[in-house]
Length: 311
Image (cartoon, rainbow, N blue to C red; front, side):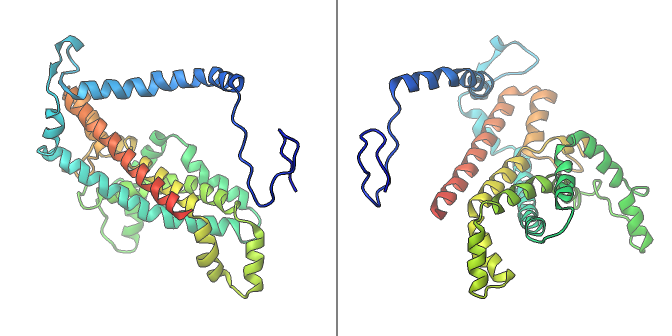
């Protein structure tokens, strides 16, 4: 039996006691302590977003002053759909995100299961090695992978040549360039997602596995009927992070392909950078950036709704 801390009377059995509302002094102190963080968020996040929206409604070159902006309303947004370059970058972005998610999620779950359940030595070292690919700067890793993908003298082409296969133009062919970047992305991020999966596995009570073993369930049945359903919320978060990271990809494309060959790797983030800083079309670039922001918000909202329905 529980006791109400405010009245000292026993709480009704079977009823969950609601937490007491915060007193005015507690709310005031909470506001004081949160105000610095909210101020930083407002300055470095909200203000840039609002400024981007404002610029997206104007015609403005970054090589001129802000006073030279010309009002266009929603014309910049309407012009995006008639822009073949934007449609191409949007198509490449969607394809890139789908490939990353399709490859990353099953691999991270598989590696998470292999690193969590078997009783073997060195699991911590393997986790550290996997996670190291995430913490190393992307620029450094991209330069290394550029050498691996190099035609003729690159290790990948040399391995293929040793078995009698003609070298593949990994980054120089429109058919393989985007897939090559996806492989690089998966290799770099898989350790991070595996660590998240392992963290989710630690939240599953061991008593459930004991009960399943008593009922005669083997490893496969435990995985499909217990582990994967209990990982639902964790996997929703992993999918969300994977999608956001894939949509925001920029460094490898800027270093390795510059959007080529023939625009096959030109994704939205790279198109925004090129439109703004190379062509000076800040209004159109801001419209692309805000559209990309809305796309990420929509994806995040859809995944959050899916997670709520699984509860």
